[in-house]
Length: 428
Ligand SMILES: [Zn+2]
Ligand SMILES: [Zn+2]
View (cartoon, rainbow, N blue to C red):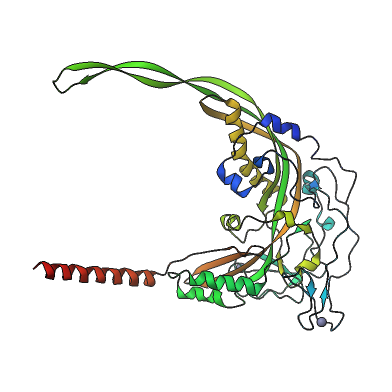
């Protein structure tokens, strides 16, 4: 990449002081979307993987040779092994370390990338193949010897012929799988057993190949924000009011009480804040809330992208593009900015009429995060289950079986009826 770009992290620290120590809304804090929220530091959580800056055009890497990983001992394809992080031969057990990229991955510039031509993009891997699901239009990229098979997101068999993957913006960083498919499947079986009301159809997920490892695309953005606001500051004041009460003898008695009022005065000003690593899913195949439920991701463990991590796994092409992802950033940061504005207005109460935010120094990273995903169709419904490929956290539809619940309710009613009958007999 390019070493001659401006340093986008240089000035934002001073913005923090202007922004004040406003307490962020709890949901933002929980997902730790912005490093600032936890005490004002601007140190990136991804020390070795820098954002792309918006001011520098990308330099293109020389065309790479085809990414295949034949076993030197037996010739079979080496696969990425989540347990030790090596490329491993499933036949003879030969292991090979994945070469770590010596080059530092630079931050990328937002504005430049919005104008990039398709031919400037890189491939995820030179031999990556891609299919699109006819049913849910999920695009899945895979590398031989992996095959597409059943759609991991909606459960239908994919019939389309795979084609050579079109170039995409290659990721800067990847969080490699840490738990294996058999570990994820075992966790899933346990999860299913603890759901007594789930329909028997969900037992499909107990099959060992019901979920598959897929790298899901994400964007993370860094941005400066400067927000001009207008609003009102409310100051409380109290007045003493006289009121009358009738006592037990029927006499009117004068009493006083303190009444609180708010005096409003116009307020306007500017707040600034630096947001670091705002994470936005770039997939359209999994619901936003389901992906958020898989958090937290140990993003401190990100490594520079290397196609070898995809060997034996699938990956998804980003479906939310860079510009649309930034629209989500605006939504995510709005709540924090609003809280900054309230802090800045001060007083006892605040009214916000208008906030207009300017975003500057926007940089981004494209990341792949590991997920085991599976889908099953039953009664015209799609049941989707996802497992965090690092922590084993499971999220999925929790449908309730009508018949199982009906059976339980009937049984309980029957027991109540017996008890009532016994009581009635004892009394008579
Ligand atoms: Zn081998
Ligand atoms: Zn599908």
